Length: 261
Image 1 (cartoon, rainbow, N blue to C red):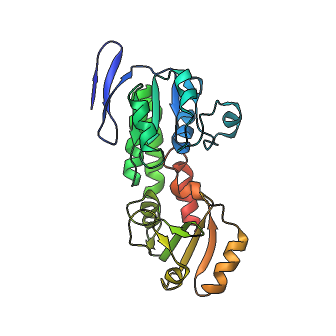
Image 2: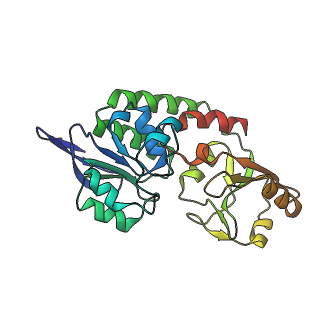
Image 3: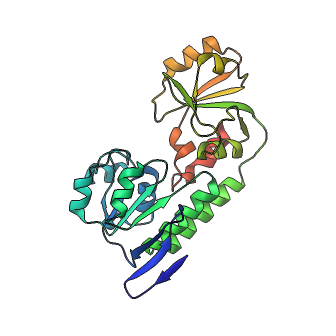
């Protein structure tokens, strides 16, 4: 929904919140890595006032940009000094209390993404609120086309691990689950969100594939070797977590990567 006057417009974010935003925001603070990369790819570099320490793409801009802490541990004083006219965050990645506090003072637009369709809607919405509609629409068309070509041929049951000690996996109601299904993998975890699992539970799952994500835990070859010893009938492999879980412009690279799996 969009309503506007001469200087501002009323928009609705993906959490159903109504926010008045400037017709042309000039001091944008981005609190989510995948959405920060999207802003740069929409040509908004001169209007990005700050980003988090985890917003590592594009690399050149990462080194130049002012940082406002981590996604869940924001430096609130730094944000306030910037006096942003738009803050862009995400329901899952940012801490509720900090977002609520910022929303009392500034326009805060929040995404809530569990599917590819949600991601495409987010891209279009950010294009709308930043005045980059044409670029956003072109981007969503490219992403949609790349995923339309992706084969959904069944490839077996997979376990996607994001952490160890304790083991944590991507379950239902997550963006990763939706991406796995689009790549032809059945998610072995039927619990919602990111449940903790014991080693015994993992071994009992009888999966064809185990994906060890590069983020948030940096799995390495040594973890592959350790799991191969206890899960000899499963294919254990390191995967690029960004291409499974980043829901911005990095999705342009995801479909080809998933095909190679």
